[in-house]
Image 1: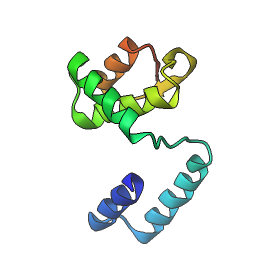
Image 2: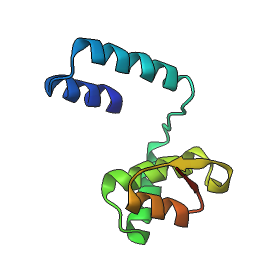
Image 3: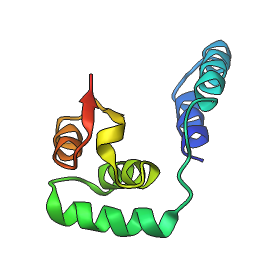
Length: 100
């Protein structure tokens, strides 16, 4: 739902039909390579822990929590792509190699 809602918002804000089609095409390519985390209770518990440990907002804590659940809490095995300084620092402290 997150991607659909983001696209809907962009269309409402003036994204052209052509740009929407390009975005959907690119997302389709990316979707073949990502993993979706469905362990909602685990993510929620992890996010609450992260909120107590790091200066994060709820959305950032949920993103980092989902990444931790996805890698079975072995962050040293995967990279974490992020451009937000606070989230990057929290991910680093949790053991992720932060990219770029």
